[in-house]
Length: 277
Picture 1: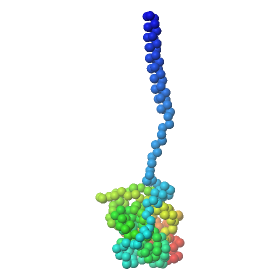
Picture 2: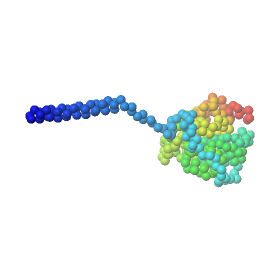
Picture 3: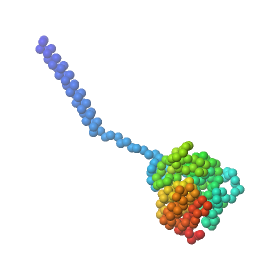
Picture 4: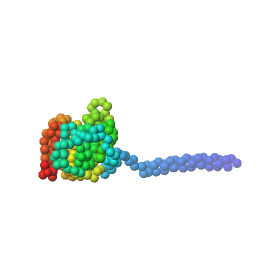
């Protein structure tokens, strides 16, 4: 009887040891498997393609979705009977240089409310042009949309380099600009000028009006000039710290003819356009 009890105690003790060994073995196997398990790859998403290159297909597609089409409604202008709308007759001068060309394509950067001081409205209304209006100020862009312009429009900023990025912008009713100084700044998305051309499938622009309150040269430096033709450029130089000379020098290096400074703007013509002057 006593020998049987001893045997049972041995079996019980041995069973406990076996169970402990099994548990330790399972824990060891689990640890080994965890070490060699394939860890999931963490993919950093960038839905806005911030800092994407100006030719990035994804960036082009994002911008394409932001472009509003020309309005099919009648104009809703404050001064519908006016012929010219520019500040200092830029539209009339462009029309003169272009010899009253009909059906051209313009880009106006710094389009304001689409009527007051507009350098493109005359060409659109009178000469039947189409084009693109770019205005980053939300308030001005809302007013622009209410004019029912017959051109594409974009409520974004113009990038000062070859990538897309967010920037701080100071709205100021047609005088707004990208800056990190001052109060009441808003955050805007910027796109390179060339990305806008790609989004519209446009490689030739008949007239570019560029007015962004002092950063015009930075924008022009971002353009791959061998891949686009801009026949006539009107670039505001009033707010350039270094004056118009750096801008003139740069555009001459790109093969453009400097036509002179007229009031607040420097004018340039593409080599293929010179013979028409």
